[in-house]
Amino acid sequence: MSDNREREQNRPPADEVVRVLDLYETREKIYTRRLKGFYRSLRNWTWIPLLAGYFLLPWLNVDGRQAVWFDLPARKFHIFSLTFWPQDFMLLAWLLIIAAFALFTVTVLVGRVWCGFTCPQTVWTILFMGAEHLWEGDRNQRIKLDKAPWSAAKVVRKGGKQLSWVLIALLTGITFVGYFNPMRELVPGIFTWTAHPAALFWIGFFAFMTYMNAGFLREQVCMYMCPYARFQAVMFDRDTLVVSYDAKRGEPRGARKKGADHATEGLGDCVDCSLCVQVCPTGIDIRDGLQYECISCGLCIDACDAVMDKMGYPKKLISFTTENAVEHGKTRVMRPRLVGYALVLLVMATLFTWTLASRVPVEVSVIRDRNMLYRETNAGLVENIYTLRISNMDNREHRYRIVVSGDYDFIIRGDTEVTVAAGELYSEPLSLMLDPGFLKEGTSSVSFTVTAVDNPALKARQESRFIGPSLGVRR
Ligand code: SF4
Ligand code: SF4
Image (cartoon, rainbow, N blue to C red; front, side, top):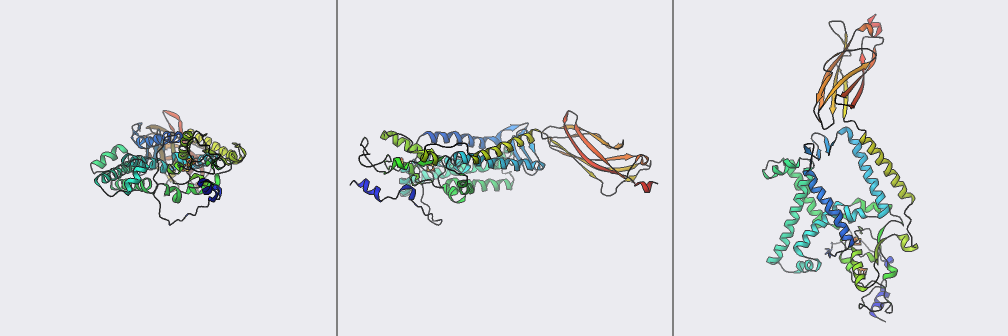
């Protein structure tokens, strides 16, 4: 009996391998190998545009101000030509719910592709690994370098890597704070030591977190810290795409000579080269079955396809597939859970878009003078005093006309046209007067309508009360 066959007979079947995870075990450093392939290229098409967007967006200006600017002191969020106020908080909450349902829908359909291709933890880890690769070389060179005694060359390589990491982390921190502090003021402020100490603190904090997460913790964030990694399994079903090893075809695994008829040696297609493990950013062996550490990056597929090509075997020993495809040869795309998530997502996205499109960027509030219900003027008129607050939530200055309507023709004292700058809140005292002889009741309703002179669609209305002496007092 060949060694291979003996070894294979003693190995438990792939689906019976039980991995015991000790939360206190010392982490084994993962040295990933870099290989070209379809999924690596696909990842380049996601992480590069995402990072470019993150770093460049705060430098983009629209309407004379930063295009994306979360102005916390003024409690205003500017997103391109839209400005959101605290009153729009519901829209933000809505947006987060839509994002959550989008993630659920994608997860049911294609598993953890969010983790493998777009999650910030993954994207920054790819960037940090790129810097590591640049300074220390590929897997074998890095292993050799770590084992080598300290020398000038080792100091240069390790130092260069650390310097690159610190620079990337600092750039990340500065950019993050730049979304809250105008970037074009923040950056000169850093170099002239005039930046606000709070801004410097947050830059340091986010730089440190980036350095730790992408430089050192890496896959441990996915394994021990990320809540999504914990609950995504409940969204999986037998038709969800996962990265899977075809054990029926691959086992028994074992080394063989190229061109040898491995079937006669009793071997499957897996040559046990361990390349799929060496490229895995979480350091797992996908041949042990689906594991929660797998972030569906597809790099093991690239590695195995390259091996299969070399051996002259068909590709896809490891592939993106579903449990049903493996067992019954077909996958059901439309299933109740997916349809449910997709429908909720569609309805919420439609409502959100409609609310956003019909949102009127002006608000008016009317506050009655709390010190007295009414007063009588020297001319014998009944007078009510109000404070009008007009919020211009648009990005342009507007002149607003104030119209008062109600049961009577009130005499208005105060400006009936005011100019409010973009993003400003304007307060104006206004009083309404009426001959008490016209009053039919003690109180009556009155409404204040504010309309932009240059755009009648910008209109807001607020109801209030006009209070006079009761009928008994007047008699
Ligand atoms: S097992 Fe494959 S798909 Fe999963 S994380 Fe590792 S390399 Fe990526
Ligand atoms: S890369 Fe493919 S052939 Fe090599 S060990 Fe992994 S599954 Fe087997």
